[in-house]
Image (cartoon, rainbow, N blue to C red; front, side, top):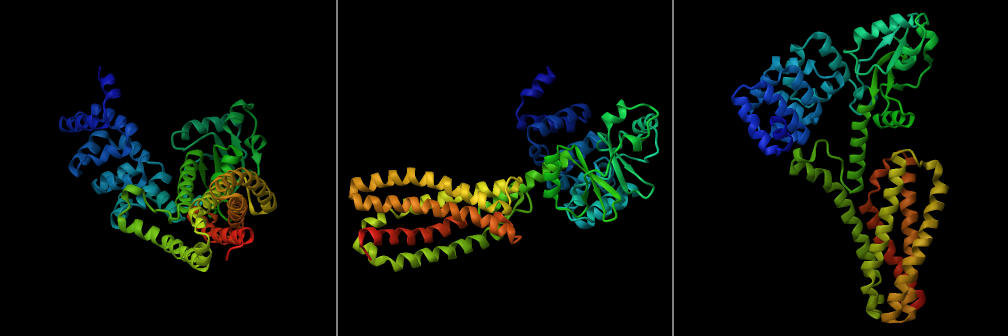
Length: 456
């Protein structure tokens, strides 16, 4: 009965029952409710509780359960909870969290309080977290975990398996065993599958894969994530400049990285600088700072469009009907440009395209644009010819065709050129492409009108 109630209750109802369990000091029910509420909505779990209730819940859950819950929260939310606990309790909870996750959380905590927590922790645990905090968060060192299994090459397979049983609980993953010399230089890697199936007297150095793929502690996290996913590894070793094994990056680590990078690219494509924290935590002032620069750039770019209008105002007076088709023409060009630049940036982000493919990409996009131009240009010709005559239909139809090819060409070229110049191609946002095509599209439109309609 209890399980059925838990499975169908709303987050609000579960939160009310959780408060009741806290008041009654029912630890078993509190743990069950907290876990289910976390599955429903992680933010709801702690947002609805005040400081006193959070402390009481933390005491009921125990260090291990609370650590498990905090590991599943966003690091900003987890840091908020940690700050509401006494220093000693916060230290005990942090010791139960994987070092890489603990480092992500502790950097979001108030600096003074975080230092108190680290001082209260076991020295070895605190040292691991401090070491991870020393690396930039967007590097392999910043996302790696120091909890891995390493062995010497001269160990027998049966003894290696026995050693694994002793350290299995401490390691983040034991799918791979890393082979190092006494100075901790990485020599090779051995899969657990191969180790288990080997002869008991076989030496580890005979079973290992020498010179495995590795990354440096200072490599960009996006490169690490892409390498791990492309190779279908469960983990990848991280070494320093002297090839000493410092940690590993696991598949769950790169899943977070890929989500962060995708979010950043989407925000840039929308013409906004990436947020440094979750949206609901961001203040209006932060949102203003992130958006104002690009908006001003795009706003100033529209002045060029005004200048084009002013230059051709005589043409508009002579053929007023031209003005009626301006929105659909420049809107079509902007849409094509946005589609193209989004497709190219996505392909570059996942490693499917690069500046060296410039000619192939440009040829592919121009060929696509020719097809689009024929279809949409024909429709526009028909619309213009029916209402304003064949010459006018030819003007707007030809303009659409030329504008689509131009927008596709610009949308394909700019990301590749900027990437070659080591500029983030995501800054070539869809709004920027639209603004550029607006101004140039008007020039194309009025030029074609001058040639066919003999105006201006």
